[in-house]
Length: 112
Image: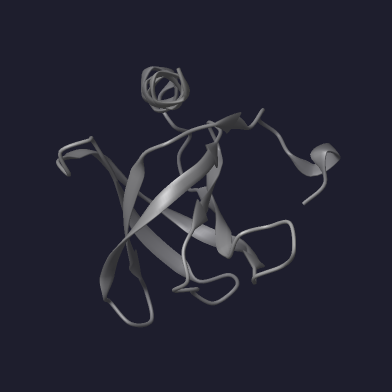
């Protein structure tokens, strides 16, 4: 997705999401690469289908649920030379600004 199509600024982030896909119903944990109020890109080898509906939980560093929500898979990235395998999800509801700040702060702490 080009920058012109994005409604919200992406921010580098660390953290984990527990994903449950609509087709398989199996839950698995993925790592955040970046996040915005409207969506996220996650690293994973377990790729859902494009346009698939997912439910997700944002987890803290202990694996406890902070919030949960639903979204739609809007982009799939298979392994390439300069990009890790993963997918982009558009959230059905905008992420709370405090949660966005938390996820970005976790990234800053880990890179410091």
